[in-house]
Length: 304
Ligand SMILES: Nc1ncnc2c1ncn2[C@@H]1O[C@H](COP(=O)(O)OP(=O)(O)O)[C@@H](O)[C@H]1O
Ligand SMILES: [Mg+2]
Image (cartoon, rainbow, N blue to C red; front, side, top):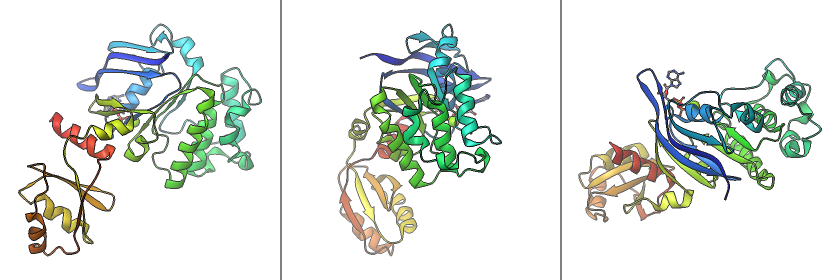
């Protein structure tokens, strides 16, 4: 399999802040590869290095077979980058933005229209509207169209779905899946754990370090404890009570449930009585499979 990105030991400091530390990973050609991590994890710094906008202090970064230092001119022609904050010209119209990006990359909208048509068709009815006056979801579609218009081999999307509504978020991932036949490698970052499941492989990143790289299902399987889902109508009261129960090791909110692990790993029957004494009724406890989030929290916990 050909490698689209190969990072070995990449490091970057800003003054005293170690933004990235010993980052090593490989992205294969044609993959949708996700970086999942909270604010400040180092995602944007890493993406700026991959897109040659920032130089690493340490390590080796090869992108599309070229070194990120010496190959930057060639690389910039072959990478599409959608930065987290908007890359669009707010006072140009939709179609003017698109034509602008096509021209900068020495191509035309017509030449690569088939690649973006599935995405651009959603916003084409508004092509005369100024980009600044589009909704968040529409801006995101236009920014993606602009990042793709020169048919890049590598598409780098920094938190493309942050701050957009749930429907637009899921539409966005559908659009990315539709790019599969074009064999474009996609690197995408997100703070949303549910989006991790839509990637071929994900890297969990925190404090400038990669905690795990794997297929999302395998990341879930990496969870090492028995996990239980506890539900009760008053969730806040429930989580507070669970966290003060001596037999419980961890208790984290997860959707409408609380995910707990026990110090002895196995379920502790006395918990029912305890919750009853705490005035918590209608309690439902079942064994459950870990989500990516559970594994992330476990890895983060074990690092301390
Ligand atoms: N230009 C910069 N100058 C100083 N510190 C920076 C700069 N860019 C990022 N950082 C710091 O590096 C760390 C990683 O930031 P960033 O890469 O933006 O993370 P993320 O994109 O995951 O939120 C943070 O501690 C951030 O404050
Ligand atoms: Mg960022």
